[in-house]
Length: 151
Image (cartoon, rainbow, N blue to C red; front, top):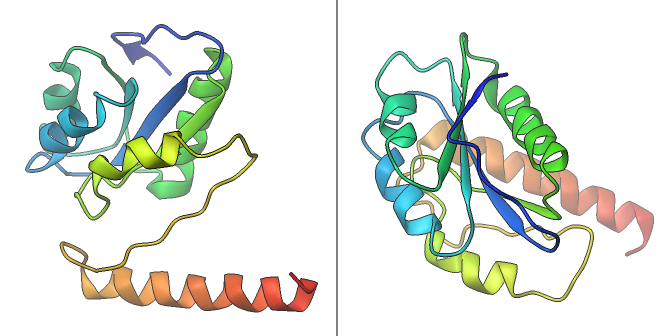
C-alpha cells in the first residue's frame, strides 16, 4: 500500500487510525482535531469523493488509499499494519464521521499502559440508526462474553 506523507515514529508513540469511506464533509475536521494528540493515518477505503485528497493535504496526516472499499475491517487491519511497520506502540481508532469526539484522545492516550482500551459512545449524535443498532448488538455480545468468562 503506498502511503502519502509518511508519519515519523518513535518509541512510546501513538498513531490515530481513521478508516474513511466517502467522508469528505467531515474528514478535515476529525483529522485537525486529532492531530494535537498524535500523528494521524487516514485509510481512505475506496471513497468516490475527495476524502483521501482532503486528508492528504493536511500536514501530519498520512493516507493509505484503497482502490476499492474493503469495509472497516480491511481498513483497520491496514492501519494497524502501518502502525506496527513504523514502530508505533499504540494505535487508536477514530470514526471519520465525527461520531467519536477527538477531544477525548488526551484522556485515552493518558491512560495507564495496557494492552487494550475499549471505549463507548455516551450519545449517538451523527450516527445513523443502522450503526446504532450494530453497536448495541456488538455491546450485548461483548457483555455476554465477559459474563461467561467470569470477569
